[in-house]
Figure 1 (cartoon, rainbow, N blue to C red):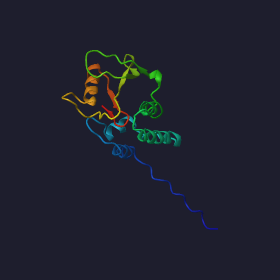
Figure 2: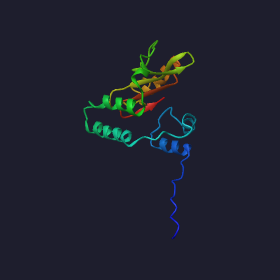
Figure 3: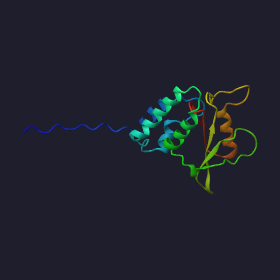
Figure 4: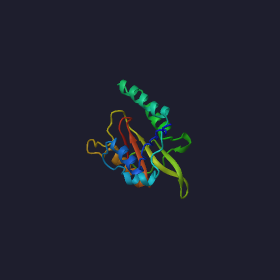
Length: 168
């Protein structure tokens, strides 16, 4: 009896290659992530997503694109924040805002040196607003969010209109 054929395993993907491929899907503009930063945060690579988790955003985005009114955008953003990023409602808090400038919709909180602290500011823009575009001599929403983060010592902000997503 001939020996059974050997099954070939797919070669393991190195985390740096996975992160570089993922970054290649994005349109970086302005302050952005690098593969080295992602390797530091996700040293074993990005977590795998199950089929339903991958299907929901694809279907949701197709619905948003098909509706020119923008009425589905708030639900789309909530799907991305809740299902994909797993930002739980109990992790969200009103951002502590002092002075002028961009006001985040909420702050994502997490453990810090002094208990729970603001870790991410979330800024929601009107549909069709490019987060990286300056208007009428004013800073872009990304620049304004980054300035707010520096002012309040929050390490990260996420700015979106639902179509364009800009971490800063």
